Image (tube, helix red, strand yellow):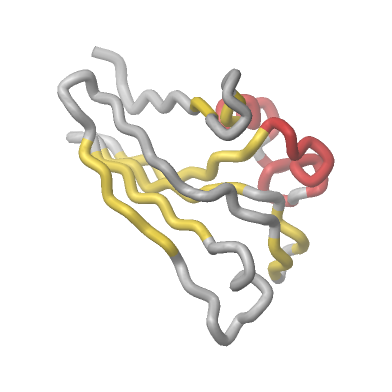
Length: 115
């Protein structure tokens, strides 16, 4: 399984002329797990309204592909005002990263298929 994630670095989100994307490619190991180390993005204004902090993922397995966004539990106020987050309905819980005991760590499980 491969994962590509993109995010906008803080300080560049508001400057459309210099906006850039950070991205990376990760290959899962023998246990079919992978980890990333990155910065938590800030929210930003968009044509559909203010977006809550989130990270985009493009995940490819042998037979399936998932394009999704990961949200953060502590951003409840901005999550509830985000148009795309609200469209998730009951699926919003699966798009939420769980903050770990270490304040700067999150866990987000993704299953492309059983087996």
